[in-house]
Length: 79
Image 1 (cartoon, rainbow, N blue to C red):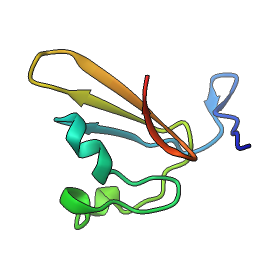
Image 2 (tube, helix red, strand yellow):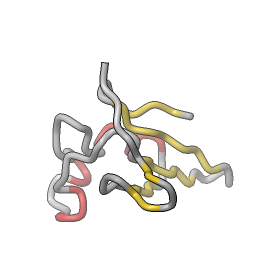
Image 3 (cartoon, rainbow, N blue to C red):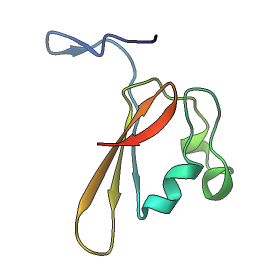
């Protein structure tokens, strides 16, 4: 079991990461709690991190819908 305290009052407790990608297919290349970015994002210094659980990614797809993912210890999951 894993957990983290994200906020104390109105102050963040950990350095959360927020990512934005164009397609859901790009989610697989994002960094996780256990590995740094791969594929499309491998050479970008912005993705050279292992973000904590609770980090998010907003996907803006061509249909105009926004899709939100959250990172857990077992990987990215659609909300």
